[in-house]
Length: 436
Image (cartoon, rainbow, N blue to C red; front, side, top):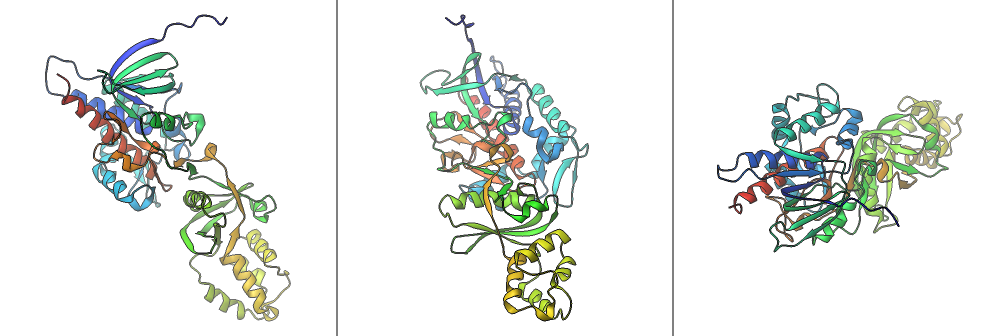
């Protein structure tokens, strides 16, 4: 027989937060600060307990932005996001916007610098600056951080004094309110393994039919010559097209060619739309324009006027030589072909290779390499003003567990700060009306 296990610790708290990533820490801080402001009474302030399975907190914060943590973007609107409802996303962002985020961190001693892309980083260029500020703020707000202690199940008994029961690896915790900030499935080694979806469903919520990696690099066919161009970075327009060739989405930004395929901002941004489209349209595909800003018509005119100049050299003036050679080969052009001998069919083939290059994507690199998750709990099941569940009173949800994901550039962190602050504040304020 296995050795006897020590009895589980029994705990009670007023507000429990699962887990302590970006959204969870913000929710815990907001809840703790709000509880400290409660009207004087014979009762002590409500307690806030944040529970996380990680030995070291903040893994996603520490790796974000190449270890610098892109905290937010200088301009954030609902158009930078996909998910259930852009109208709902707009309302959330209005309640806690970029100015609120900067003020929050400035008050903690974190200063920011804005890069040309609009991304905002701490002036230290260290993600640790951001995480340390959050952990200090949590302690100052009298939040108890319990870790490593992995939550294994949740239950809801609305008639109990403490309706929510969280079972962890070492304890049974009863809470008056519960904030789910468990994240999605991206970067599972940080603890985001999708268990939060199981918790949400156990508490009466639904999950979108498809859960995809988002902001994720894409793998191309093994036989693609693009794989031999690893290390090249250049601006590219990448379009998502339906099987009918209808244009669905488009992003123009830096693109990195790698040993496995494609990465960089343009690829990361379009990845979630591509993966989502493929669930209903197997013919959906990506097309690259390696000369964004140049019209096909103007390029065609230039090709017709090359005379004795070689198209391969003409293209090398505009693109890295390795890529230019690859595109010419893809179009079936010999290096010695001159403009004077170029046929209309050859011009069309070269322009297709340059301006409408179908990318032979086979799959994404998966959640292990994704920065966030597409899909989750629909916002229609949440009260946007408070982030409270419409199915389980006293339950609040924030961050990546919700069906909202943003572009690369700090937008997902802004969503975490906004939803976390709203949820934590509302959860604490709800106790003022019931605590006697």
